Image 1 (tube, helix red, strand yellow):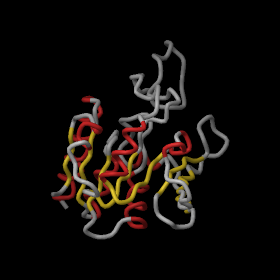
Image 2 (cartoon, rainbow, N blue to C red):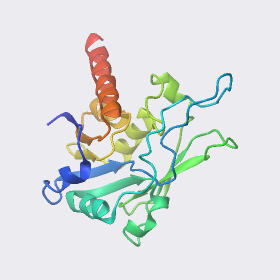
Image 3 (cartoon, one colour):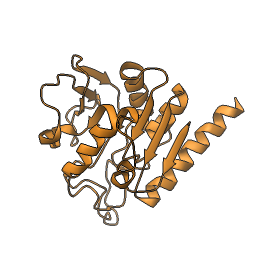
Length: 211
């Protein structure tokens, strides 16, 4: 199976999938808070964040149908930004995950939250966002570190598991799955993000072969 990336609508794809086809879905869907990039900066004005073109994909959260399909096709789920759509989560699950960005007091949030369907205690992963620069810089406004996805796989997946990502974005999860030998099906609707993520994965794989 390997790492397979698709430039298509994830909901359309999931409707063609079998029940419980995937062991674990690790997803980072739109939060509906309107942060899918920045407006063009005025000449001479500096920003503490890399500029990413505003695309409007974060204007609303996924539909109820998306969450129903996600839970149908995967045995377990880790859902980033789940504090924005708690009405779609399974009730009574205690296993939340916290990414502590180790950059407290800035304009962005100190941490991000993910829901997990596992009956495990809440866990915290601490990793400064500067790791993104060490991993090659950002190609997506809400990019998460490869190290974060590796930690998720090491703590919540089992060897041989099939992984699903419905919103591939920067492709960090694809590199993490490649590093740890997990099969992945990743979907990204935006062609620009998809091409950038695919290129990023190919460069990573070529570098591994060199060494």
